[in-house]
Image (cartoon, rainbow, N blue to C red):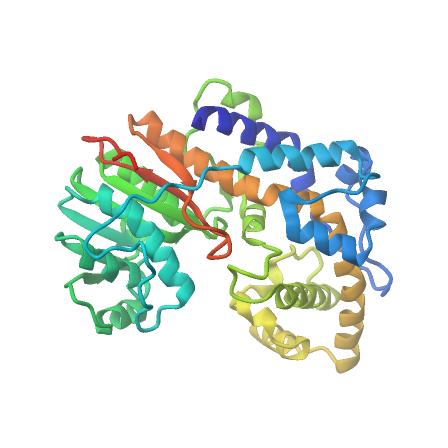
Length: 423
């Protein structure tokens, strides 16, 4: 299954790479009616006029439904075919949940201190995968343990040493301070800088291990023979400017050339969601934040930062900064760069421009949005193929429903010495 699905995902990304690379909304002209050029990839395919003619209601429906959307009769057949192909690539099975005891997790457990209901549901689903894998491990290592919710949960379920590795000392200290009926340990470790040393009897786990950290876990598990359970997230978080395939020497892969080398900006596309559930903020708040970011991008370009890539406007700021009003956002972004804050009139002009540009960009971005999940699946399949290349059995699928978290793709592999327990 993994090989055939990989072929489909890789071919789709390669065939549509020009669509993925053509990000709408990057206009920096001075006119308020200048909302950017139409990407050539959309013109060539005959999609642009249909997309730009969509009403607000039609746009909302297509964004929210995604691969399951019903397209209007006048939609270009090739665009509908893209949606169908993306849907097929991303149709992964929901993993079955074998019973666990004790404690049982068939009924939701109450959330712990500082643990949200969403996090509780994610941990309970992940524990169903981890506990069988770790049943004969000498130790379990939770990479990127944060507040330690998963670390403590697994330590309370199995009679094994459980260690949380966290780069931020403040988070590790907070994790140590939270109560637990077991005795997990927490270590301040930068895995990407210091490396991840595993033994064949280890089980390494990561719930929403970001970007490069997930790749490092896969490579370390493959080299050592350790068991692995991983749910990835934020694929763009990596030191290199692009992500190369972990498994790039299989027959036929050479035919893709550089089409499957994915830059950070493109990997970040997989984080976008049009949902109202399973996300930190509402759909309306997310859309408003993107509109403000586009306005900020324009302000910076007009101030002399021409050629600034989209997404770079928030460099030095947390992404949640875009949830603040535009004057506050602009003041922070310009202060970080040591630049004078634009006038109120300039900010108002940028806001007016971004309303037009963002509405236009949303329509022209629909084909890219259809491919966002495909990119996430492609990375999952690349990691799975890498493990298979090292003689490992691999299971992939959906760990929980998207209303719990849109980042719900799981990869599990038993230690080299044994096979996965069937559900």
